[in-house]
Structure formats: C-alpha cells, structure tokens
Image (cartoon, rainbow, N blue to C red; front, side, top):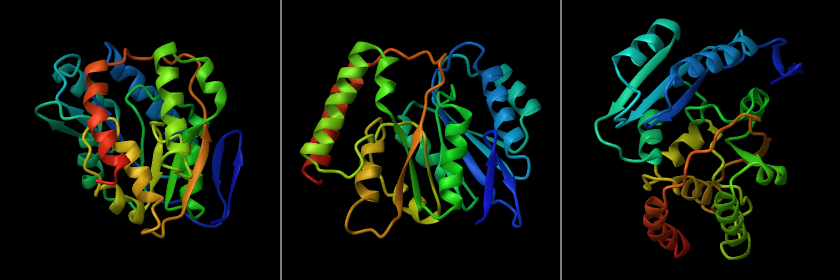
Length: 251
C-alpha cells in the first residue's frame, strides 16, 4: 500500500488507510491519568486524520483512580471508545486478550495506559502492518537501558540473553509493551494462555514458531523522555518464574 511519511505523519496517496483498534489495559493508574490518556489519543488521531481509530480500554479490576468520574471524563472526550471491566485483577495478558477478542477492525495495536512510547513509534508499528507484516513487534534499542532503573535493567538484559542463547528466539525483545497484528496475528495472540507479564514472551514464541507462517517484523521504538517507571512487583515476578519454566520446556 503506497503511503508517504512527512514529519511523522502518514499521508494518504491513492487508497484509504485501514482502521485499527488501539487496545489499552489499565490497572490502578496514577491520579490524573485520564487527561494524559485523552491527550495522547488526540495526538495520535491528529497524525492519522483519515484513519478510524477505535479505542478499547480494559479496566483490569482497578481499585483506585478508575471511578465514575474518570469514566465520565473519558466518554465525554473520546470518540469511538469502549470501556471493558474485569471485576477482579487477572493480569495484563488476560486484559489484553479480553480487549483483542472484542476488536472488530482488521488491525490491532496495543500499548500501556501511560503511552510510554513516542508517537512516531506507534505510527511505525501501524505503517509496518499496513505494508504487509502480520505481526509488528516493538524493539527497544540499547539506549533504552540508560533510562530504566537498575533492577529492571538487570532483569531485562538477563531475559534477552536467555532468549537468544538458550531458547534461540529470532527476536529477543519480547517484553516491549507496544505490538500490533492483523487477523492472522490476532488468532495466535488469542491462543496465548499466560495471564500476567510473560504473555508477551509466549506470544512471540508462538508467532515465530516454525509451525506458523506469520510475517513477524521487529520495529524500532523509543520511550518518551518523561516516562515514569512503576515499581517492580517481585511477588508477581516470582510467580512468573513458573510460566517461564513452562515456556522453556515448551509446555
């Protein structure tokens, strides 16, 4: 599909650009998050004026900062928005599968509630999908590690080393929170089982398996300079170690 890009803005040439669903999981977001959410969505729509963007926001059992007040603000200021709620917190993987299952467009992209990646990064994922990839995976460059807390940096680097040398995956940045796919990729994503953070690794492992014919493309993405990292939940990480062993042994 012929498109051009000027100042990070995709421009229509001779065909209408396809719509997509933007799926965003949410759990106990920071105070005032709804205003940032509207701002980022507005910026994205401004750069894709001819594209219909449907927003699916999945509230994963939040117990704070997701009240009728925030919901009312969102519904009054964001078109094509669907809010879905899971009564209890089940994990990011579960929330995203819920949102993806409800998606109706031919393309889906997901990111985090604080929109941690730059606008050009989201546009790059979209452009990769409309130019032929079944799955577009955000890939963070090495300078990403200059901005993250020490513990997160160590865990991330260790995981990438294991994926490259032990599991021998062709793509090692599995945990980037910006990914997209078409109907073929969607089918694989909905077959993932892990509810929490390692659903990303499970999806990449399945998508790059020899048993699939998916076209999987890594896409260079960058974090926004003002991103605030959440504290790591070591209890969740310990629980995820069981899922990692299962993935390691192919179960």
